[in-house]
Length: 275
Image 1 (spheres, rainbow, N blue to C red):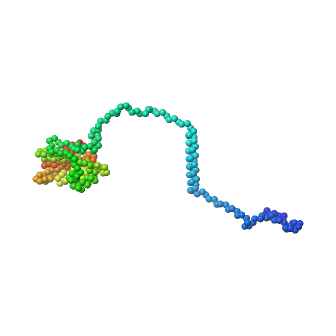
Image 2 (cartoon, rainbow, N blue to C red):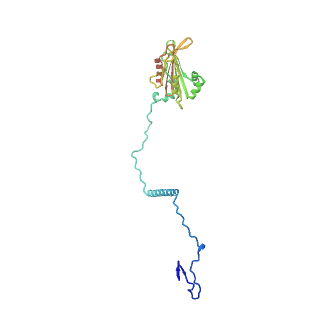
Image 3 (cartoon, rainbow, N blue to C red):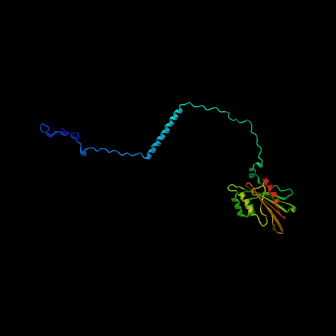
């Protein structure tokens, strides 16, 4: 008997009765044997799956740490707060001290929201035919240029206007007009624009060049130069402009004699002091 590849065989003539010896070869051979399972190839973890795994691990770590901290802290006794250093404030008995009423010079709102008519400069001693009153938007527009000016005043935030006038001098030959026009200046500062427009519309043929008004930022004075012809008279007109907040101040002096800068400055300075 021989061993060939692990199989045991007997020779044909090995038996006494001449029978063939049995074979010990496996019965499943060839196609009848089950296939050997193939090994799955190795695939590395994708970056996205790795990110999700790391994020999940981080969240679990935070939750675990927070739970452990809460468990430790909940087992500790409460720490008492330190006592207050001083007692709380107490309200003194009785009413508080009374405050004096604000002066006009200390309260600008008393001028901008108060009675503008009372802010007009007073007429000088000896003046005649003194008048003071309110000027409507229609009346002011009529003095400027009619309907178009009415619309412009409306668009530019016209609020109110007052005017004072008086006659003085020999035979009341000098007429002074003071006009205060207040604008709202909510969406745009038109008071400053009104001052520039007035200076730009000055009559260069009958008035001198603008002279800065002392004590103001952009006030101007226009003394008279040549007279206007009115019937059989020759009338000189001088002009001075300034502003205080949203109030536009205009002063006009008409006379049979030339109007000086000094006369204009005297009137408008007194008006600015009132404001």
